[in-house]
Image (cartoon, rainbow, N blue to C red; front, top):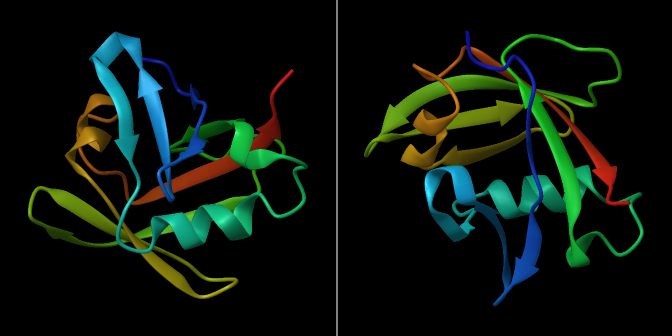
Length: 115
C-alpha cells in the first residue's frame, strides 16, 4: 500500500516554484502553467515561504486540508486541475505519476511552514 499523505518541500528558484524529491531523482522540478500562481495564493500567510515550505497532499480529504483541486483534463502527459476559490487552473506535469497510479479526481493540499 502506498502512502495516503505525501509531502514535498517547494521553494522559489529562478523565478518559479520548484521541488526536489530524492526518491524519484527530481531536482528543481518546476511548477509551470498556472501552478506557480496557485502556490502563491496558497502560501500567502506563510512568512518567507519562498525559502521553502512543506506541502502535504492527498487524493483523499484529511484534517486541516486548505484547498481542494479538481481534475479538469489530461494534456501532454500531465493533468489540469482547478481550484474553486479563488477560481484558478494549473497543469501538473507527468511527475504527478510518481505519487499517484492515475491522476486523482481531486487533490487535497495543505501548506505548512518548515521547521
